[in-house]
Length: 253
Image (cartoon, rainbow, N blue to C red; front, top):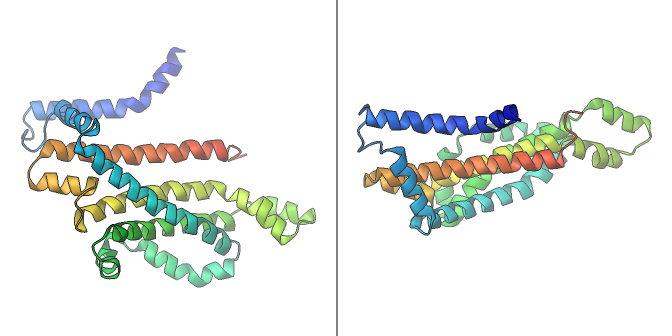
């Protein structure tokens, strides 16, 4: 029991250590309090902002844009990845384009998306969806292509048709890498949404709040917004990990 409690406490050790080092750094005047406020004051600003303050509104806008972008990416990325992954010749014909745009920093495409969609919310959602769909598509396709050959061969030996192999073997075998893609995709969507909120004429959202607070030297609010964005990303990652364990419970067997 005591060992289980210690293991359960381990995830909290990192944040506690971070805040202790942060507090000692400020109190020792290694960094000016003007640039780095005490963690207690920052957390108080965070709590105040989320409990009815404007931070809660900006948080809501960022969550909405992230879910919109991720939803678009998942709806198109997963089925297209499975479709192209089940036909290696088809995938090889577009592999260069996928790898090229997946390797291109999405933030570098912001000017292009501004020319296409203008300075609008649609722009922020579109560029985040574009970045996310590439990650989801790539993982879904490779999940199908790398399905365990033994199970595919066993299905063929038992007389399964190509459609039955696709439906009953390939899709189920690819679920784990699909979830890896979804987890990476939602993180990518959040990152790009916040970057877009910083630099594409936004008047709300966590990205706008971070850059606006930095410009007026409201460091408490800036750090509170950064912590809020990090907590959101962490929560989304944990959500998809739990979902994956519940749905793909046979993974590794």
